[in-house]
Image 1: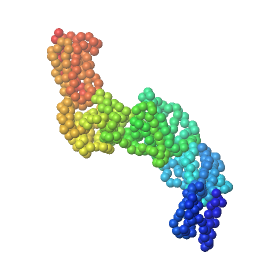
Image 2: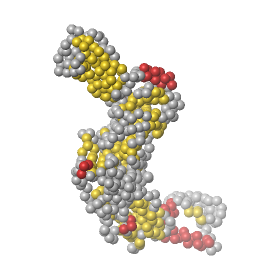
Image 3: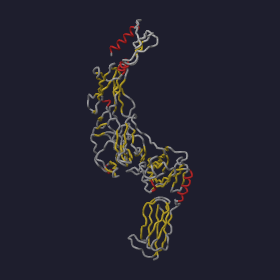
Image 4: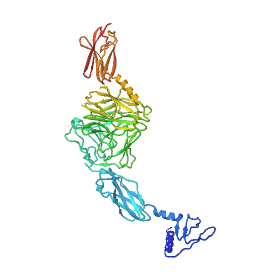
Length: 597
């Protein structure tokens, strides 16, 4: 084939010197060509065809395409890259065998560090005509790790690239530190505050001694299978842990007394348990992640001196995160580079979503969300997120899904088949002195026909232009604070406001029992304008306690309770005068009753 190409080149050279190659068309008709040109067309075995006049040499198809195609092929690269790079190991090389019939102009190793978009190009040394090598120097070895691929260019400027390779990268004792630039806690974890953290690397020795806070510090892990806190024996990569200490200075974690490895810079998948999972990124630089169907976006805990949960779309090294999975088949995949198929924002399927924040002076909660979407229902479903477990006092906005009075969720997504709806909520204070601001941080898919109103239950106030106007809770919340959000068309919102206000008492009150006199059963009405602890006790004329009818936390509203005329031991009481006493949130009222047998 090379000889064939050489002949054609010689023919071109002869023509350039003024000589002519006169040819005839070889065909069934044997008709001579009219021009002094050489035209080679078609593949091997096809007839040569007549061409227009002109002194030209045209080579098309067939053997010429085959020959020219061989010279346009990029180099063939067989790369060799270490799976593990040990910190103190000398003479670590990346090597490539490169072949190409055009010869090789250059072969380089392209390196990209974790957390960087820049590409570092390392020229490779040619050991012979086909073997190239470059050293993995100490300057390339860090906790960030790197990925690399071979790039080669031949003599015809054809370029070939290999897929990326990435090693396990060993780091030295004390090299992996929370004080790093990318760290979520660059100044360490402050004293007297619960925080979630994780180790962004594999530790050679990862055992921890169990301890109590009184001894200086304590670790906790969350067991989602038993919904309980446990003290871990070891710190595993990819898991988040709760930590608190009482030392004078902030605690800065590092790999003290042990080496470790930075994991390869490739997608890292964690299998989740059902319900809440405490996780952490395995990488020592910020990354995003992809979540399987139904898995929530991550929530992080604490900000500065304040306590509370907030959602995020970035996983930072050393931070711990809560992620909710509706099943034990959920996964989260950390993507170290943006060229991976990562998901970094919430989406809503043919509906709307409103994210609500409550922020106080000590605590905050930025996990609450309501809305409608395809696939969701009016009752508890996988799109509803339960309250996140916490070891600290915190502020919470809690949802009552299905109107069952449980208030056990932080988000309530409902069916897209309905337009109108009422969301019953409670703000749990946990020693928050106030004031507390309730506002909306994000709205997605809100139509112009969808109206909102907020009812401040304890004050019987209505905010018609929510979320443009925030709800401000001035009082310190001792128990919980009831809030009702109405969403729908304007007529529905106005109608529901009237109905709901009619069910909210204006003040505490204890009604007269009926019938009175009674024998032996009587009923007692009472009204509670606020949710909280309530007691209703029966006394005799001597002031002795006869029966406690009620001693628990009760929702606001109008209530009725029945007394069957029995004392606390189940014995019938005698005829006489008795007193019912209602106590709630500093309120106390007594009514006289008469039992006649």
